[in-house]
Amino acid sequence: IRNPPILIMLASKIQRRAFSASARNLSKVAVLGAAGGIGQPLSLLLKMNTRVTDLALYDIRLGPGVAADVSHVNTKSTVKGYDPTPSGLAACLEGSDIVLIPAGVPRKPGMTRDDLFNTNASIVRDLAKAVAESAPKAKVLVISNPVNSTVPICAEIFKAKGVYNPKTLFGVTTLDVVRASRFVSEIKGTDPKDENITVVGGHSGVTIVPLFSQSSHPDLSSNAELVKRVQFGGDEVVKAKDGAGSATLSMAMAGARMADSLLRAADGEKGVTEPTFVDSPLYKDQGIDFFSSQVELGPNGVEKILPVGKVDANEEKLIEACLGDLKKNIEKGVAFVAQNP
Ligand code: NAD
Ligand code: LMR
Image (spheres, rainbow, N blue to C red):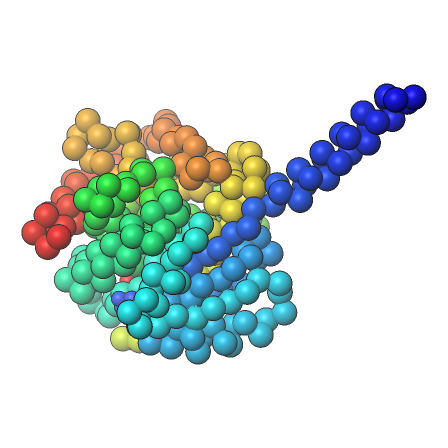
């Protein structure tokens, strides 16, 4: 070997190339409930995401139809649709890195999210069983309401199947921070992309707690109207749609953002944080096993659950009110699986 330094340089160049080829993961993403109001625009946004390499779309109706449509969008990913033939759901899930679940019924005016429990609990339970069997290592993003109960339902099913990993189960609460930043920007005349509002708790009414004291507008914590608007933003859409459903387009955007954050974290990007409803140590001493706070994401899902941090007196009261409802919602989900395994 006459020129060892050149050989070393070449070897490291080849190594670097091999690394950059493998650094980008192949990412199969499945959507269960893909033909619905959320499912369709969510599938479209995922098709536009270059980190997604394979998109698998399942619904009890129209999965293959939506897939055929979305598959003509000229990005590289493959798209396949599935319907509930005996092996349809299993085939959709197999090899998935991320599974998004927007399956289930939406609210009509006058309903609370908890009123959806009777219908959606069993839908989510059955889908969770399928995930446990066919994609036990996938990161599961639960959108179906009531999120405060459907996430514990998934956890109980995964535990029963022996595949529960608290780092890979997420209730999607991204829409609450999306709304909070937009509403604040409307009041302050700012760009919503600069408004990072932390929202903690759960995803329904008073369990949604915006922490404006931690934002660049701490004065807003005493703006009761704004706080209420963030807590009940979903109702605004339900009322405006007048019986035809709830938020679908903004939710699709929020779900696609959460999926993208997980994909970026899986690709090795550091410092990716999102608010999300996870198995959390923050209020376990009060018997509350799931809580939404800022969570740092990593290749394995949850990397670090960030604390709620300093809150003011108004927010302390909001958290107090949140915890009572949240505990009941979580217990209801756990009891459902115990009684209807
Ligand atoms: P939708 O009725 O338009 O769509 C639901 C879809 O789920 C339908 O296509 C239906 O065929 C499908 N579905 C029903 N049972 C299924 C099953 N067993 N397997 C697979 N697919 C099934 O409703 P939507 O507006 O898309 O809302 C869906 C859910 O998302 C609702 O529960 C709603 O409350 C919830 N949601 C959550 C958030 C959030 O922030 N987490 C925001 C908006 C809506
Ligand atoms: C939302 O926040 O828009 C969703 O949870 C749907 C709903 O029922 O309000």
